Length: 250
Image (tube, rainbow, N blue to C red):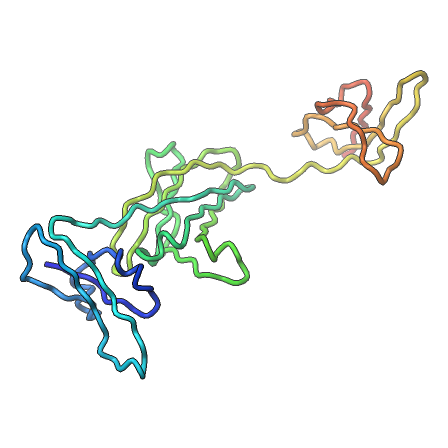
């Protein structure tokens, strides 16, 4: 028994030659997209050509060709996550459109918060991501954006493709990611330098008392405020550094 889908004019023939010849029989039959050839022999290859009887002058649909060997059963391909982007309280999962689109029309995205032991589906309905001119990334990639409850917690993601007939592909390999704090600290205010004699200068600044997640301050020196400053230290100077006097403000 051989089942295969009838091509449409939206897919090039090169893609149809690799289209998996597997689909749920009932769904394909209901859509008039199924042909069964019962006169086949094991160990032989068969070439099938599908053409639409519509007059090409009215509406042209290119024929499709598929090659099948009865010794082989072609499984659906495994989805591939190409990249994850770690944002603040958000993870972006990306996969290439050109690799997956010939086989799948929708996807399930799953997340694990227990180091990959169990996964939970994130999308309620099969996820699709159409191309948008306003989003150039969507031309080459499909992107799923996952809002996460906390930064710096490790999550694992995996992707499963779904064919137009509802068949599930092989889940992708998992990708690890975590949200990260991307908000920079506020700049110091009221920065002043006071000459203390000899080769000593004392810097005073105001900084919010509630800002705790900073290592210190980078101090630079220059002769022109409109030009680049020369760093005085390679590492941030801590608030306790004698060169820095921090005046906390609420």
